[in-house]
Image (cartoon, rainbow, N blue to C red; front, side, top):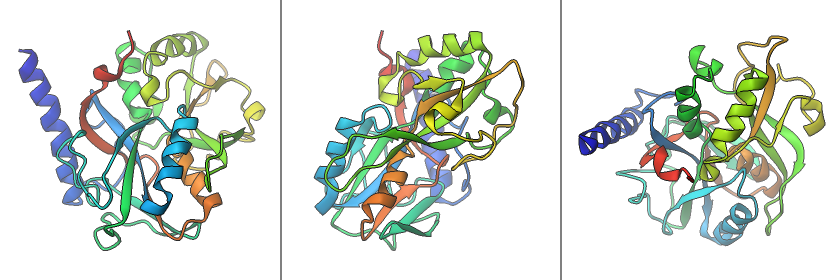
Length: 267
């Protein structure tokens, strides 16, 4: 029975990737293939890959590395039957730190000197939060989770430096405490929140004006904003590095892998 359940999950993950490959899915992936790990993407030339790997190592909260391709290889067999050029709903292409395109397919951009990095995503810890009865308002409203650039410095590595990006979810104080307990078991997908309440303390002036994603769909006096380190951080860092070419995912549009979220839990 356990094998059948895993097969169902894997089929759901593969079906999602195939739908992305066909361009049937071009938006956010929150709530898709529940139970399986979703990842952020950053693709750089091999010239910058060592520095970027060091940046991830030094900043494990926003950049928990869960997969890395060989130079020029479009496949990530440890994460599933994946073609990294087609299996994300939408990408962002940066040239010299400027976003120049947001395609659904990067086959025409891929070169044999590229290296793809996949970073853990907060969507993966949302399943255990939902299982605990904690509402995810962005999933209920079919919107992209709000994300904010903060005043928190990342530890630099080579050309890579910049501020941490966070994702935010509105919760009751009791749910916020429970979410800390639950997500601390998932360090490979950002772990426990870095802050809650008083967003101005981390440089967020207005939670209704996120830098990425959609504004929170529900804001009430009985709810507090809870902030997690976010895998969109490399996109902010890329702006500073001004690489000749870098490709990332569109915020909210993730790579759905065959790895189960439960495999990442620390007991």
